[in-house]
Image (cartoon, rainbow, N blue to C red):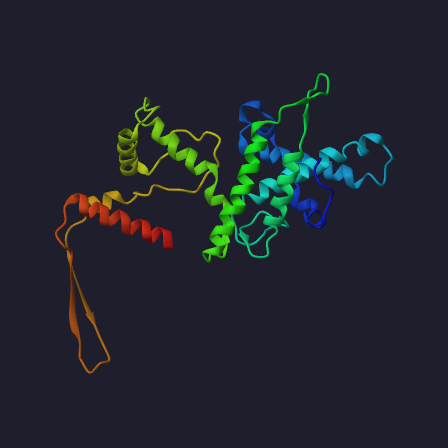
Length: 279
């Protein structure tokens, strides 16, 4: 069973946990990972309201909802702790932020690993114990890996770690694009993988063939200004620079070196990537 309500639970306000349930949360055709997570959090919010009313009502059905309420709150915190996209916590979600010194992530992950290891699943037919699902074991490995990764990065001098940047969606989109290139590239070897990657790089860096169940990652084509690179003309840039060194002025000429088309494209791509990263 999940642990009892702690001080961290108290900090999770009802308003911060409340998620509005709309049509796509209930449609079987639209149940994807993002909607399922929101649906669990909506259920958690309702269960939490029932828990707060327990002291006012003696209905046994409200008392029996404690287990569901604790489980939903626990899973909500697990999702938050591995999906932070900002450095500081927002809207009262103390775990939905970057892992850093002073955050509660390591403490919560230690507790969560113990909870996952002690989870017991029973059959709906006769109540007998059944084998623990592989997803629970994998989540234990995920939390242990995040602990190791943060402690390693922290020892190297990093101040924080945003876990949203290393989630599954980015890798899933990338490898999905590789496999879908040419429609029949389902089992690419190393050579096919490298050639497909080059083609996707030139077309539109790992562009999606279908949205799948991934959230929008706000990415645009890494080579969205490729046309400018290909059609650019060699030009000499003159610039008069005044210096307070007893000199009047001098002229500086920047001459673009003669490069092949591939060389110019490479320089443009690397420069564009660096500028986009900095901006």
